[in-house]
Length: 248
Image 1: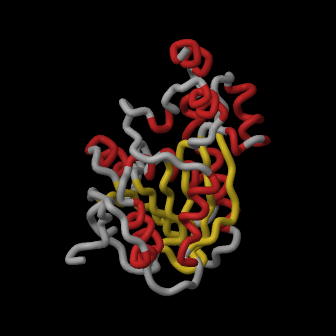
Image 2: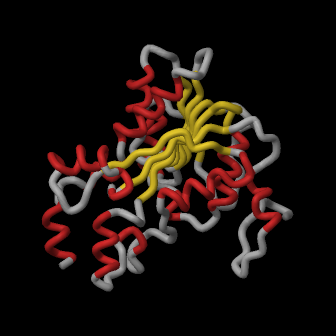
């Protein structure tokens, strides 16, 4: 069954990244942001495709582009494009930026690879200006193909035991997490790709039925709430410890 589904979806994998969705969300949010240059950070920037698309979507506004990545070819290529890149472990290190300096932070297909989401989101909230936005993309654990796989007793592909993902997200679960503590407000969401259909059908269906799409995307505004998102952990006790920062 997996082989048959893989054959049907072949060639649509790039749609999982929802580059057009991220760029459109950036354009809409930037219309509320005064002044230039706008400062944009991409966590796990990869090839730099999202920053490139956001720069084009926001033209002719001036942007200062920053990225975080640890894969040296990506770091080198991004620097060649004029992106200021830092290499660090976002699960254990603070982002090397001052408080409240970023207008937009992109984290596209990143959180599903991490355990320390409290720390990561806390750092994003710290460096964002009040009114700035986190543009977030994750695989959708409640996608149509995942529901069918689970119904058949199969492991859903977003949390494949032999795969790279260590977390699974649904729209409601992720929204509740981000809104906890009042540091973020989810202002819009959408979807991209629709397994196992070809692109001609997958793109419109993902727009019409985002809850069943392969990937979920959210635009989350940083509120004026003071403090840090890591405070959410103070009222919780987990058997598995979470990183709260050096010396904590």
